[in-house]
Structure formats: C-alpha cells, structure tokens
Length: 368
Image 1 (tube, one colour):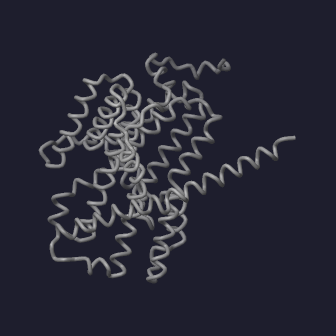
Image 2 (tube, one colour):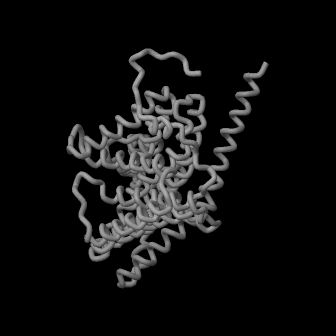
Image 3 (cartoon, helix red, strand yellow):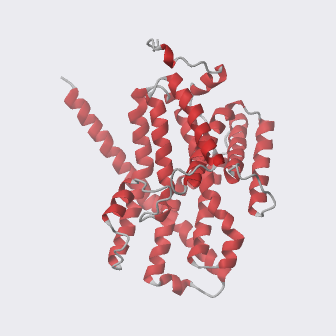
C-alpha cells in the first residue's frame, strides 16, 4: 500500500497513462526485425564515415543520408529502455540494478576503444587531443558542450544516452505520480524548445532535437502492445517509405518534425507490433547482428583514424571511389565483428563478474 503523500503531489492522470507506467517488460519477444534494423543503422554510419575519410564529395552527396542512422539509435534506445524497465518506475529499490545494466552496456566496451585510440595517438606522437580536460571528459563521458567531440569522436551520442538514462533513473526513484508527470512534462518541454529554436546555449536546437528522439521511442514502447497486426504492417510500410523518401529527397517534412526520428519510430513500432502478434522472427543470425551494432559503432572510426595516420589508408586507395568506400566499409564492419567477440563480450563478462563478486562480499560483510 502506498504511503500517504501531501495533497500537492496528487495529480490526476488518464487511466491509460497509469496502465502504461505499469506496463510489464516484453520479455517473451526477441525483436529480430529490430536487431537487423539496428545493425543496418550501424552499417549506415560506417558508410557515412567511410565517405568522409576518403574525402569523396560525390559519394558524400549520394550517401550523406546515412548519417541519420544516429537518429534511429536514439529512438531505439528510448523504446528499449521503456519496454524493458517500465515496470521499474517508482521502485527505487531497482535503481541499482538499472544503473548496473546501463554501466555494463556503455562503459566497458567504450573504455576498450578509448584505450586503443589513446595508444595509437601516443605511438604516433599525436598528443594534441590528449589534454587533461579531454581525457577526463572522454573517460567518463562528461559532456562539455551540446556536441562535444572527445577523443572518440562519435561518443558525443553517448552523452545523450547517459542524459536519458539519468532522467529515467530519476523516474525509477520517484513516486509513480511524479514519474508520470515527468514522463509527460519533460518531453513536452524538450520538444517545445526544439520547435521554438530557443538558444540558451550553443547547438541548443540540435540538443533538444536529439533528446526528443528518445521520447519518440518511449511513446512507441507504450503504444506497441496495443497495435494490431494490420496497423503494425501499415506503420512499418509507412516508415520504410518515409525513410526511402527522405534518402532520395522525395519527401520533405516540416522543420518542426524530426523527420528521420519519426520514420524510425514508425519502423520500430510496426516491426515490434507484428512480432508481438505473429511471433518473433528472431534467429541466431539476427541475435548476432543486434549484438554487433554497438561494437561496430564504437570501433570503426578510431580504426579509420589509425589507418589514416599510419599511411595504410592511402595504400588501400585504388582510384575507384566506389570500390575504395566499399573496401573501407567492409573493414569497418569486420572490425565490429572481431571487436565484439574478442573484446566486448569478454570485457563485459569480466566487469559483470567483478560487480557480482563485490556484491557478494558486501552481503557477507553485512551478515551477522
């Protein structure tokens, strides 16, 4: 039974919002379609950076849209966190477990890549990025601006991930009605600031747009259990058509709509709804593809930098831009595969064991 709270905390919410806050995690479904989609999003970002490193203007013009794989990841993160942890809202005793899972997901693999990047910078005597400020912010993912490019350039997106995790952790720790209020009011405020273009600091509009994408995913997670197969199929088709239209510039949405985020939300909603109703399309292959995306995202850009600094990138050039980009993309994707099995999985398992050992030791000390 809930303890009595001051009357100022009493906010009347529609019943469907209260039910959504109690939504259990969808643990029985492994979304194979989303695992494939997230790997394709990671591959798209590898394609974008390949064109940038080869300085191919024509390639960049044709495939510049691949940058927006980042928007898909932001929406997906909001969806995953909400569908997995909605039942934890207003249960502060679960905050430690939530924080541990998020830590294991983000930091150990990231630190491996950071160590590699620092190592080759020192090896080639490139010490300019290795300031104390940059090392501190890069190690702990502390943002210094709305788009802080640290030692691992693409880690700027992880700043937004951590901001969302902190916000969701606060919602876990607070009473249900306050959590619901935050889940409604904060997204409305963030989206309003994005639409209005309010500039309290540099790159504010971009920051509010990125943060709002996480809440697109939260909305999808709340709605998906209530979407029929027919509606799911329609949303999936509409999302894919919108993505294709945006890529070919055949579709132009108003500036107040994060177009790529909206299309990503439609794809995730449609794919998840169909799998819930019709059964998962998950397989060992889709599981592996889903697991590869984070490592691929982390390792490919530092690897490309190493190839450039060492002179190996120039040796890979054949004079055929399309072929060169294809080779570099293949290298980036293969590096993600190797990194996942050789580094990411072992280091996460190591940290998990260390945390479990410490927890058992703390319990043993606490016992009389």
